[in-house]
Length: 188
Image 1 (cartoon, rainbow, N blue to C red):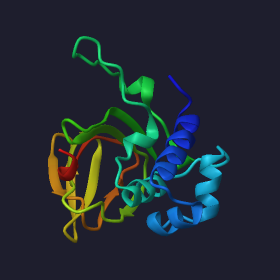
Image 2 (tube, rainbow, N blue to C red; image 1 turned 30 degrees about the vertical axis):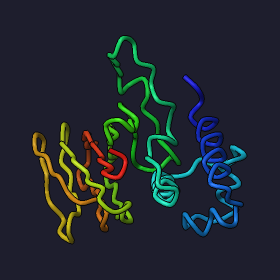
Image 3 (spheres, rainbow, N blue to C red; image 1 turned 45 degrees about the vertical axis):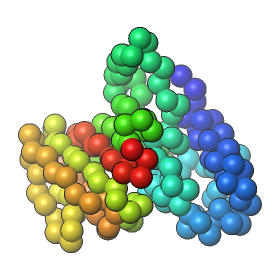
């Protein structure tokens, strides 16, 4: 498997150049500073998931496109193990395993997310029409959806519009593990 940092810098530079954007214009489009974008492209920075989301939303691409290449299919079947692909972008309080990176034919990406104790983040809206579905497999979570923090325990699931402010919070003293499916309708 390619080093995630090298994959990120190559993909970001490719997407920016394919769009015909300078670092200055890419900074305006994504809301991420020119300096940070340059550092990522040179492999000098490990951005947080929040920063990666801003870049992905600005370029209208999936988050998983920055985390790793699309997995190879063998006769139409793909088997993935979260333990082998789990990452901690930017060393923040969340681990990410892009179990099934974005597939344009299907219009979604599928993650295992591990939220460390006391993790809390309010996310900016994704592009219009995006929906998220989250199922809790370990621990408990609070999800901000449509302005209300929803409490979820193991075995519960939630679906909500990701194109508005939303958030994730683990107020427990142990990890919370969820599966998250993000659907992009414009690409389906």
